[in-house]
Length: 220
Image (cartoon, rainbow, N blue to C red; front, side, top):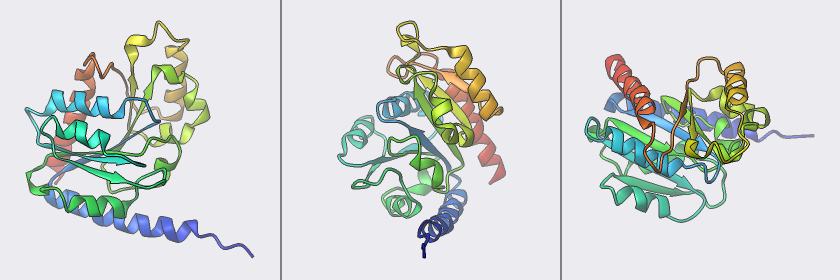
């Protein structure tokens, strides 16, 4: 006899995620779940996004990591509220973790909440957190073949950021093939090539995000 324990866990997560979504909508906050592998540049992309949008929107960040508070400290150093979640080994964030982190934020003062998920291309795809959009980051050094190997994360992402684009001449990265595979998996997802640490080409990504924030405001 086999007992599948995954279904009750996912059901509980879905229920709490729906409650989180109600909290976000009542506060008028747009919430983004940012996913990527370790080293892809999630925190540097968040900092570049903050630099592009902080004059227009009030922003906070929830940082997910297995251990340490290094990334939350980097965000807080820029004057942005940041809450660190350490999963202690779990490869993804879950809805109840987000719920507990919300208690440390002044939700009524926020327009945008960015959740930096734990670095992983598999686990975060299974867990809805109540966010309005999932976005994934792939960095050029990881290779253009990642959509073949991890199709699920590309299929659920509403946008794909191609980070470290300034290194594309150094690595054997076939951008045309990458775009074709992403488009076959998810035809509606735009691809934004950026270099987060240099702030290059962040504008189009930031405007896409601003559009989603405004659309959410109009809806709520």
